[in-house]
Length: 452
Image (cartoon, rainbow, N blue to C red; front, side, top):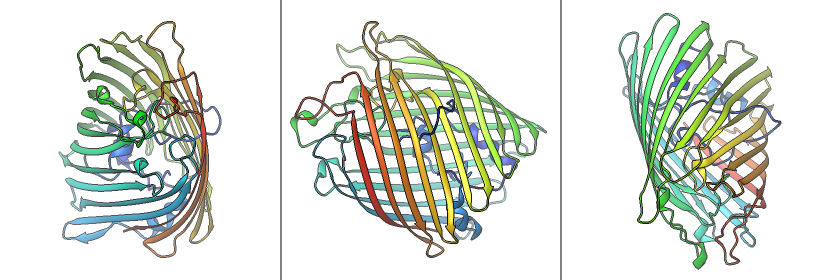
């Protein structure tokens, strides 16, 4: 869900701390899969100093924004608690036969931001638990702890952030071939950036270090266990962004990015280490109160220094359009095409394309409808010249209604449908010897959430 905020001169920070603005050409209507290639979007709180935020929200947040929800003031700081509980039913929990059942989803978070006039610090912790009473091994708990800060140096700003997260690869996520039961992994991220400002031009060098450690799945069937330790790796990224303000709220952006990945070694196995680079040019037009959009095009390449993988060079692009025709409706169209970050078994040589359309409508003052329809696809190139590429296509439809019945509490009813199709076979994880990358699932949920 894309949010709404007043335009200001600090929006440039949105790009400076992102992995990069990858991504896509409008192919139609689609959605962003749960396995998002942009790790920072998953792990880092959007309002944490030292990272970045882009609250380009929709009418679903209108009441909260109008009521000014800064959090709970405690001295020179604001505390921001949030919690939610959902109950539902999933017809295909693991993307395989006979895995339907009820589900319970619990989320809680607590953030702290300073309320200083110049410098800023912040910290956040969050936890998310998914439980399936009839299929206990499919349940998992993710959590994250982050801290960061920025220093105002007059015209310039320096920032530093750190995050530690425990996450899981999941069977129905886009691109997670060969996964049955959840596979845990940890992520540690450190990033540093410096913004040098002139009158209209800003130069923003940044660097990030990530360390990923993958573990074992623990299903109830002997064939379900998977040791994914060889996916463990460290990743270093360097990026230089230039931003020229054509007018207030409108800018031209250029980005150069380089990255290097080193995978865990094992006797008899050659790791698929690689180096990569990319260049991107884009526009950021945010001054119009009715129609706003960002677009970026470029190219990137990935060369495998060990492991025998064939080099990958691909065009990349991203488009984000926000249309607010009136006070009752918001339409958000997004799309992307680019290389996966290495967070799933086949991501080292995997490209992703997605498109999505989100419609938010305020039916009444406190009742808001959300509609989401989307399409996504991954292409995993084979490491051998004569082998077939793996392709997975997922389509999704979702609809929900929010009832903001108090300033802090919201009730939500949601239905979503997911269809996944896999081209070419893959090794397997279930008792039959085959996983099901071709499946459909339907999810019904009812929940209550609190935010302050």
